[in-house]
Image 1: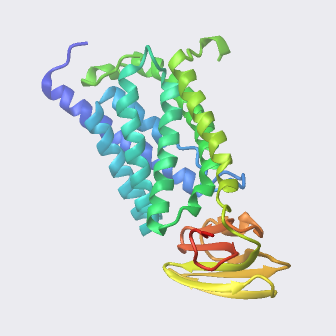
Image 2: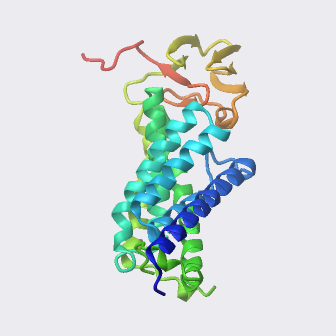
Image 3: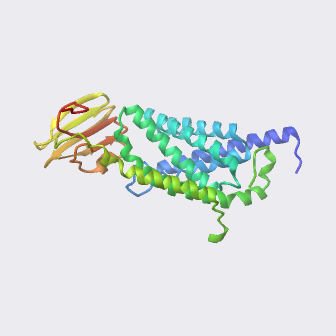
Length: 182
Length: 128
């Protein structure tokens, strides 16, 4: 499907807006309806699905912008000063892992493993931020739970992404100049 | 959604293996902390930099105000817990009772860390 340059720009713009909104909706839902399990700070992390998808269709700069905007807006709307730093650190760590691992998809990794790794990096980043902010190593007690939930939620996110990509690609989202490879 | 259609690559398995390894290692962390500590005899409350130390032998409730949140640190039967907190996640309350030296209860929104301590006060290493 050949698209003109301005057509591509408009498509990218529309996609960016849509993905940001989707990210915020996921974040809001996770905030409004937390998991009923007594696990500390465990969230489904579906926003990561959107960010990974963004990296695949729009490229890494857009994905990074999406991630940072999400952190900013979510912490402004229903977060606190502390949660902003935790989120920021987590999001940056997750993006770093995404940037390192995603080029190897498909092939060495699949989106499922990458999602799990990103979730783990996200939680680890949050823990490091908490440890630095509180100047305490005691926060490491959260580590086992965080890693386990990251493994599970990351896998779920990855699975969702894996099954959602082919239909979306068929819908013609690959004409936006990204790194779509699936 | 057949299970066979999920392409879990060999790299994925490596990722999961590494994560599982980290998880298992992190389980060993708490037992590695109380190395030089003796018997637990006091509780140290670090509220956003302000440190207070209370005895573990006397049952009491201590109200802690920090960063706009109020917590109640309760000492009962040689153990300490956060019996009440007005933070949004209440994870500190859910942590329950700690009684061994090195264990701690953390409240991130209030920036409060409650740690059980014992043995020599404020000594990192005891030589001799």
